Length: 69
Image (cartoon, rainbow, N blue to C red; front, top):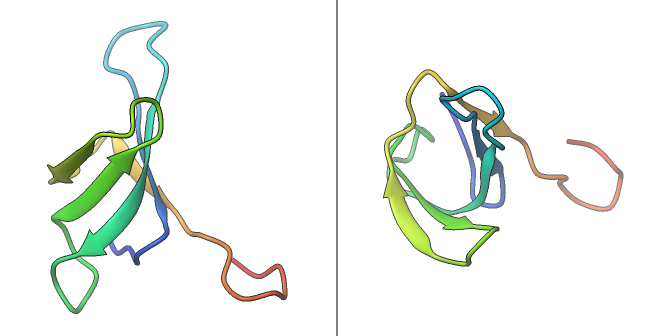
């Protein structure tokens, strides 16, 4: 898993009917973009150090003004 600051981290719920937990990556601790990540969760604004598991995915942030991801 590779991420950059500004990307979204989405954790799927582990139980049927759980909503995904979505956060914005605020810091990447390794130069190659590998975990762990500092994440600000969108639902409550809290910060956490996250080591994403197999239920996680990274959604790239839009970069620049061209609409590219």
